Length: 240
Ligand SMILES: [Zn+2]
Ligand SMILES: [Zn+2]
Image 1 (cartoon, helix red, strand yellow):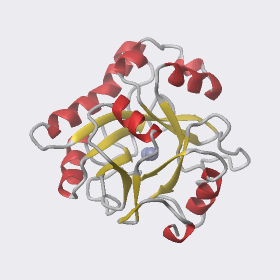
Image 2 (cartoon, rainbow, N blue to C red):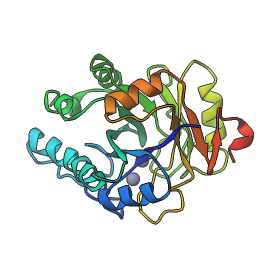
Image 3 (cartoon, protein in one colour):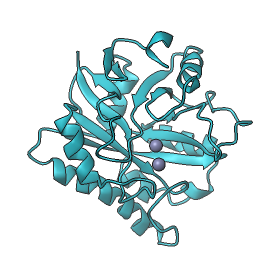
Image 4 (cartoon, rainbow, N blue to C red):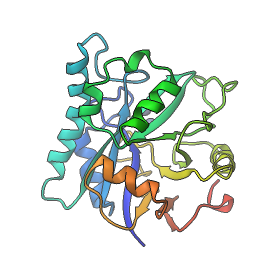
């Protein structure tokens, strides 16, 4: 029932909160039977490990370096490494971005000044997609008075292996409101994490680039891995 891809994971090269390197993640996911992973390190805000004072081009090349490291580690493994990122846009809220690459980042040095509406518009112009990550995650760093931006995102992450009971079901209800792209992700920060093997999407074919990954999700022909179970669609009973 399809090729399994992780949609959400972090490397220590780019994310301060991550323990394992991108190379270690690649090997761990490959052993667990995934066909590939999308590296979604924390971007310019949030828990980024890339110094903010660097000139834009160098900063972006450093972000991309983790992806290139992962890709190098995957050479000869029959494993796809895809570039993505997790963008914190304020109030502890975050979106996952797929379908753009380093060339996009290099020509958009004003990203730090954009609000989320402008940011999403920019991603759409470049052919990428924006998914609301863990829309109802309740943590001390999240302003719960601010809701997810369901009005402008393309999709909803309905299962995040790091969520607490109830948070995923609420995300699923949100996803029912429109024909959103639905994703499931491990939000893994460590190569020994048991969440590797618990979450992801099942694509009908292999993908080699971020554009191809975004395109595959847009077709909405994918399945899901929730708590290690392969599913054609996600229901409330599959969540907490
Ligand atoms: Zn993190
Ligand atoms: Zn994350």
